[in-house]
Amino acid sequence: MYDVIIIGAGVVGSLIARALSRYRLKILLLDKAWDVGEGTTKANTAIVHAGYDAKPGTLKAKLNVAGNALYDQVCGELDVDFERCGTYVVALSSEELPLLEELRARGRENGVPGLSILSAEEMFRREPALNPATKGALHAPGGGLVDPFGLCIGAAENAVLNGVELRLGTLVSGILRQGDEIGGVITPGGAIRARWTIIAAGLWADELMASAGLSGFHITPRKGEYFVLDKVAAEQVRSVLFPCPTPISKGILVTRTIHGNVLLGPNAADVDDKEDLRTTAAGLDEVLAGALKLVPSLDTRQVIRTFAGLRAAGSGGPVAGDFYIDIPAGTRGLLVLAGIESPGLTASPAIAEYVVDLLREAGLKLEERPDYNPQRRAIPRFSELSTAEREALIALDPRYGRVICRCETVTEGEIVAACHGPIPARTYDALKRRTRVGTGRCQGAFDLPRVLQIMSRELGVSPLELTKQGPGSPFLLRRTKEVQDGAV
Image (cartoon, rainbow, N blue to C red; front, side, top):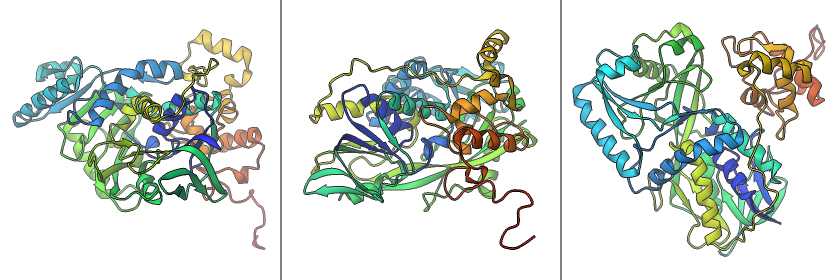
């Protein structure tokens, strides 16, 4: 019997687990994937939104602004890369200038500090590569950039270090319900009981709600496609550039990333398949056209990767279009989070605090643990260290002196540390998210054999057992020159 089961180890579920680990509770965090953050958390724009976009009075608006304000503290405690670089909404015509005024007024109503409208001349000084047609821009100094993988991993690791049990590769197929009482979850391995069950399952929240006997809420996957450009492209993009938004999207933006690349996207297209992460020619053409409207000099020869992510767009229920975070009427022991689309990443630290408050008000006894530690240290990133820091690290562990990934300057020491962390990297994608190995210009083409060799050694498994993201995604089929099925 657990006090709390949390379904979903994305950034929201992981931060909830961390927030609850402050208290004397027996907590279980579940995810069907083989690493934390494998859903929407791993494929988004990585922007910390200021809060001018959400409709005033909504939970989105409240938690966006509150979450933004928590980022300095949370990222500091978890040793996560975060930069409050500011964001811009760019008007490319005189007709769009009134929209900037509307967004500023909305932001002020939401409590966003420091919003101002800049002239075209000032914008060209700040962003020289902007479209010459630019007429002005809304500046939000509180907006920023974050490493979403790092935030999720940091929160989950901190939760585990504070006593939360994490089970990956565990599908929740149903919710235990008897009368109005929710008693836990159903998995292929059997039932797991809990006094409280929290659904934080992103795209699958509506299906789990239905399993609990709740109807009327539906999630539509909204696909967004992206280009990743090599770091040399950052010479043209200094910050975060939004176009004027549409009714369903903040638009196709051009942004520098926290690690120095440039990101273009996303578009927005509703799809039926919750696992459809394919990019499309039409979608990528749309993204490129939108990005070139903001920065016409972008060079497609600098593209090193494309990808797609899915947002959990909610509809129906009591709060259509808003975040749904509540203890549903007619149930006891169930708390649901659904429709947590953009700005869910920004809001996530505040969402975690909001959930704790809801549980406290519902009667869950929350007694603080004297040994709770909010601090978590990330793996040292060799590429970001000074010469003196590098020499000191190599003196402690010579493996930090062996560079494996040349594009991102990732060392053997970092790979080894990731394989033995609080949540060990057991797949290649998990390793990428912890170390950035394989994320540079060559996309792992040069270092993959050596990386797999190190992972095999450190995890104590055959290289043939290593996968990209879990069962069904093997890298290697057999050893070179081995005979297979009688064929030479």
